[in-house]
Image (cartoon, rainbow, N blue to C red; front, side, top):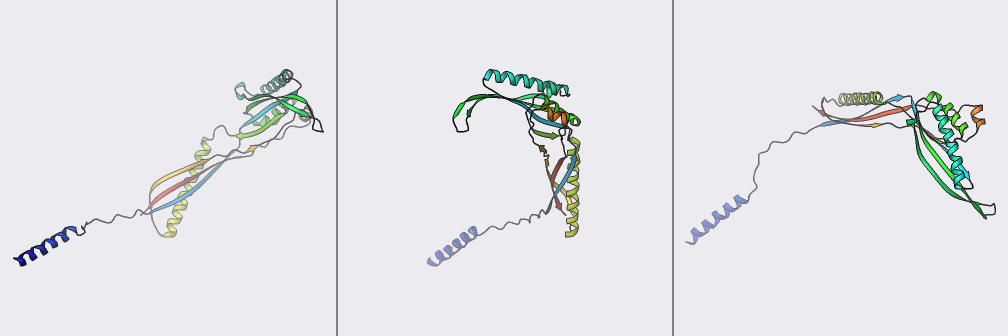
Length: 240
């Protein structure tokens, strides 16, 4: 009886071990997705045809009312000069009007009282760059004594961006083929394309002081330079 019990116990233990053993799964190995990634650059160049300028009048006086009145008269003269130079009403936008007292001091540091300062600044869009120098002369003669942040731009950059993108893609394609030839591989389909457009604007900053003598003797020299439209692309190819 004891022998039969031992045989039964051994068989049960064997069945338990078999049940707890690792399962074997027959799974096919996944194919390796081999890729090649390249970055291409493209650029196009444009001559600016539009400019944005801040033109203003700064006035100082003993009282707030007389300073505002003087500034208003001078600013209106500047606006008239801009319109006579061909600037449309819609291209003139006031961006700042401020009035504030300024404490004055003697050379020894003693306070001598206050004066009032008034600033009126207009954001001007100039669409005729050939006459930009003369326009600045006219506004200075009219009383503008704060001119700064001249920014050049191109009204329509659509074609230039399209050209730069095409150049960037072509550059990436050439690089990919050169790498494939050097490595002895064959390129497959394009898996992914991403791109980034970059359109920096050159800025010429300057200050203009009021005075008819300057306008009478010379025309303000303005150099718009050149705008660069650049595009970078990233293309991923499969490798056959």
